[in-house]
Length: 287
Image (tube, rainbow, N blue to C red; front, side):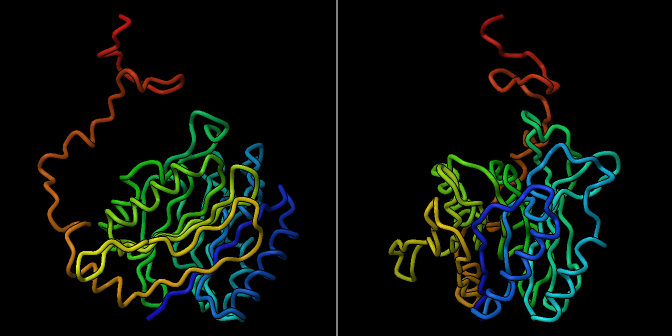
């Protein structure tokens, strides 16, 4: 079984909702023509990454119904991304739409960039996984991928493939981290990022890092150039991935969870203290 993911590398237009949805539908047609199962968009593609948006003008599920209808018409899935209406402030969200047009899952970014303009957003509170055409899919958005806990929780919830809508630069260390997330969780991973100088590099990684003889193999399925624009494709061999997950020793095989209590400690000490973040001052050598 092959899961073919179409990955869009381009930048949308801020607040041009109708035009951005038109672009998405055109790319859905193109992706379907190339036998893709699902199309992954960069972060906040429908609305554009416009953090001045008012909560009342952020999107709801009703606004993405045309994309659900198109998914059903074409028989292709979609990870639709936008700033969506929250309780009091907008959220940075992704809807996983199935091939029959239904919304399988809505995920809102947990790790909002509270050191920057995203501090105006309402953070999501949980990670989740859905069943897409027989494959367990999880989503994490941009800054989520800086924290290994994000992918780890998705793996623990049963994710086989993790899809990452993204919008940022300085990609080299982030590509290395994404490859590591695939390796350590034995999950396939794909990331969509807008094109541009010091940006782009949309990618996909297999969790399979060595063969049956223990010989290392390149787990890179896709790495787009920074300035390239358009659709790129990654084929995930689910039979091979599942066989690898059944025999290898990463993921949730030999974890020692009794030693992990400190992961739930929310205290922030030097040198990680930042403005606007509650913390303790313990351990600051300047004091």
